[in-house]
Amino acid sequence: MRRSKDVSAGLLAYRRKNGLEVLLAHPGGPFWAKKDDGVWTIPKGLVEPDDDLIGAARREFTEETNLVADGELIALAPVNQKSGKTVHAFAFEADFDLAQFASNEFQIEWPPRSGRRKGFPEIDRIAYFALSIAMVKILPYQRPLLEELKRRLG
Image (cartoon, rainbow, N blue to C red):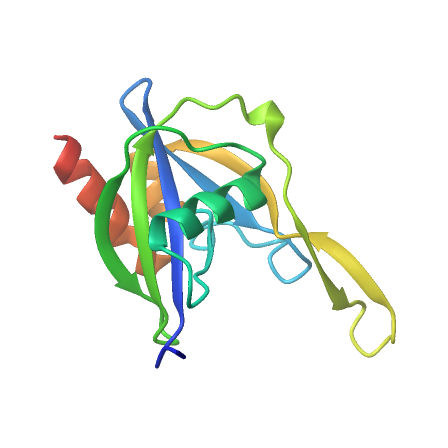
């Protein structure tokens, strides 16, 4: 059965180190290479029609970061992209060793109209940010996820 609109699911890792910090991912590829503020995201991906949200969120997190999300998840209120896609997010506490980071790749024609395909990492880097900095770094439509996490954790 086909959904009327796309759905994504992702995970928002947080740790309590010098206050609340969240793990965000910077998109890979040439379009994002020189962009920083307002483009970072939670690791997330498309939920297939037969997937459950949590399973898809865990799978996408691992594919995009090479890290495994264990433990209890806190469901956050879904947010919507401008395209209409709904993004479901789940928060969990984890202090990852970021040296283990590796991302899956995607292929595009690069340079444009060259006829050559080149691979780029889906995510080119990840980092923990203090909440105040994360509010500047994250995509605007995802800011409510950070606000809700802050409220829920006190």
